[in-house]
Image (cartoon, rainbow, N blue to C red):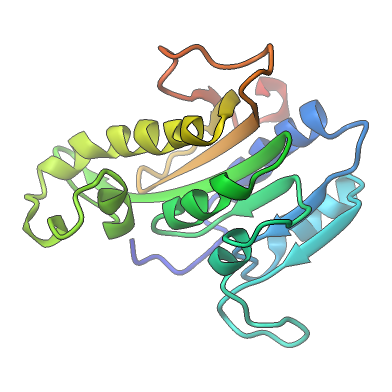
Length: 215
């Protein structure tokens, strides 16, 4: 995915985050790690609407007043205190996701932006997504017609990776958007002994609409 903008469908992204903040963080202000801060538009708006205990925005792109950091390296380290992790990157978020899971302690909310260029029966899913399926080294040789078929499998497979670390999916929602090239996913994770969790057969996220009334 080659798109460089981080605000194509800002309303859909905001509604997804509002839903999870209202449901899981209303009584306990969150500590937020914004892994791909970009221009900071999302959390600038959200911090006007919701109280946060702390906010840390990082990015590989240098910006005045911000330290240039690779957020994957942060997530690979044990002990980070945040309980909201926002991975709003175009392309594949799965490198971040895989780095985060072994070190995720307690209930945590995660936002994922998944890039996938799909047109009809052909498309292009990111290299990182294909490698997440265990197809490392095969990306260059995959026919375009295989990509749309693999896109859904990547999402299901990667979301299920938490089971390897004693983590269960409590809730998964996808924001409704007209942009077929990207998916906006919200995930609530908790310890495997949580009473509320997705059943094993629930493989696809539900959709949350753009308007507040649909949330």
